[in-house]
Image (cartoon, rainbow, N blue to C red; front, side, top):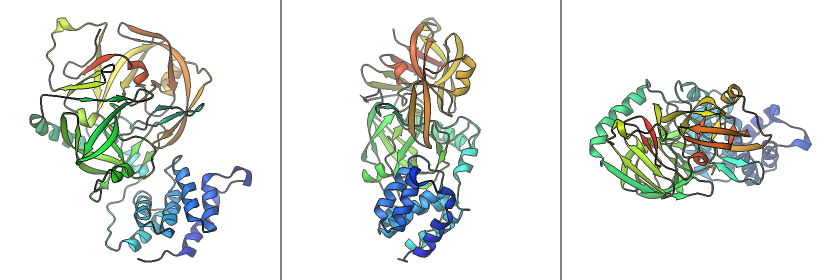
Amino acid sequence: MKPICILSALAILASSAGHAHAADTLTPYDLGLQSYKKGDYAKASTYFEEALKKTQGDPLLWYYDALCFHQLKNWAMAKSRYKTTALYFPQTEAGKRAAAALKGIDPSFTMPQPATATGAANQASGTASKGGSADEAKGGNKSADTKAKDDDDDDDPEEVAAKAALAKELPTLPETAHFYFKKGAHGHMEVDLMVNGHPVKALFDTGASAFFYRDQLKEAGLDLNGAKAGRGARGWAGVAVPTSTIPAEVKLGTLTRHLNITMQESTTHLGNNLIGQDFVRGYQYEIDDKGCRVDLKKTLAVKKSDINPMYDIPLTKEGKDDYISFTINSQPARAFIDTGASNTIISNSDAARMGIQSSGESVRMSGVGGDITMQRAYVTIRIGGMMREGFPVLIGGHAGCALGQDLMEGWRYKVDREHNLLRFYH
């Protein structure tokens, strides 16, 4: 094990004057630097971890955090932080030094093909990744949980390969399956998974794919040594974060599937693990919100005479998401169905187009990609024959519009992909 060069590390610390702030406005970053220079590496790491919760696009934060763990001889964490820095910021000074330090910790380690967070974001030519756990600015109550998915597009080679794999896999799966969920404090659908035979808690989130936090999987006992660099993921804040992928057997209820799951490289508890579109792909899914049960069916026979325009809403599938059209304040709107969001979210551009005015209430969100502040507004929403007046929505984000649990709560509904309908039971 090669010792790290303290003087070399401090040289970078000293060269980062662009991050300095006035004494009365010290940030976690500044406090971390001060603690590091004093030799209090545990305290410094705490500050850097706090800073990483707000932004994960700064290579210096990852590198300094790695230095702290290195000095504390926490080799697993140091290696993880060095790897993230070297892999996703290879052209920076911090990235180059991280790669050298990583080689010192593990001489046999070979860096995979480097990727960048920016490059991962630029690869997304289709539906943007969505997400962000939301904490109310007042009271700190969580109003939506972290969610993200790989950037993808129907014409992407990986998506084409996924479709071919699905066509091969579906005949081996049962015609029907089901699972139960527990309603979280804010309407989230909490489920218990088995991932490679280990129990893991997650949220069932139709706005996400299969997104997990690396530390939670390690705590569950999973071997993650075979993970490969991913394409990055983005949250509602719109910032790409590093990810890795690994094949896994995922069991939920009566259905078991083999998926490539995405993991956030950060080993902080920023949010909940998510299971969504990847797991239900190829199935119609029926959600009984009151009974806390989800039923999956490969096919569903429906006669045209059975379709009720008041309760059967046309939907379109884009990528892995299901979109419906409806009205807000009598203006046309479009959103994807997102069981992982506590709140219904309207993009800034759509809010401006429809003349939706903020009530002046702010909601602070933090999660994948950093922090973002959204504004609350009250609107009239009509979906088919159903209408809600004075309904609260959040305005903001960088992932379009999403219909959350607050709008779907109390209903039993089915996403019928065979007939392209969102069907409400009445």
